[in-house]
Length: 312
Ligand code: PMT
Image (cartoon, rainbow, N blue to C red; front, top):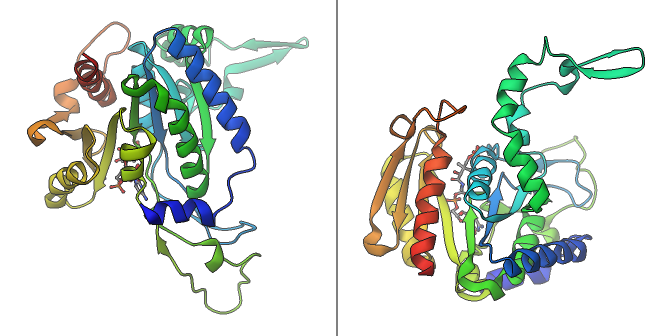
């Protein structure tokens, strides 16, 4: 845990840390008074800057799909959601139009902007299932977005959000689906200015401290905490997920492989380290307008049940 404390001492907080903290604190106050549970979802990948005046950075594969889809299902289950996300990754609701070009939906004539029904036919179908929930969420102010880019921002914001959620104890649920860099460059090992292209580039990486123990033991010791485990080699996956539960003493790990993460996950629970594997084919069912039930729907349903049990 010392390494974690050192991380915060050695790095400057982001310039907007106070306004982020104020916004989150107010959001927690409003929804806790109304008796809502609050889910803190971390989503997308963190960057690792190469220079202090950052021109280049290292990134990872995460699209934010898992987190953004899960946020919608938590909202549908009545949770208020703090969505700590990589600024350029997928966001709840907006993700449904992420592959569209909004300019293609519109026509312009006689100084009037119109939605072009001929080109937006598919769009109407897509949005019909999403817009009612989105409008409801906006009306209830139940989604609070906190964007990050670098691993530094991620950890400073996560600490502040945890502080704000600590008083609500078991009502808070952490769903840590972000792909956080395991290595970073310390500011003391980072050049101030753009590295010039002449000559070889040598970078010194340090281990990013694992904040989970600090989170589960000090920041939010009473919260319901779900972490994620990603591997590319199947034999490592479940043993590593179980090892994480032993080490961090939290409630649940969602384990997934890079290649199959869209269609299969295994939930490893703290009670007897019981495992539940969910596959998209078995989770698929036709319901209303949505023909396909997303894997995140099943994951979130299971987790909400476990959170209810934890609260009882
Ligand atoms: O975004 P998508 O494209 O939809 O992909 C979803 C996903 C694959 C990113 C997601 O399902 C997932 O598995 N996220 C976690 C990936 C990951 O970082 O796993 P890990 O084994 O490196 O870390 C395990 C846990 O430790 C994570 O919950 C992370 O929040 C936490 N961690 C990681 C590094 C670090 N220095 N400190 C941490 O606390």
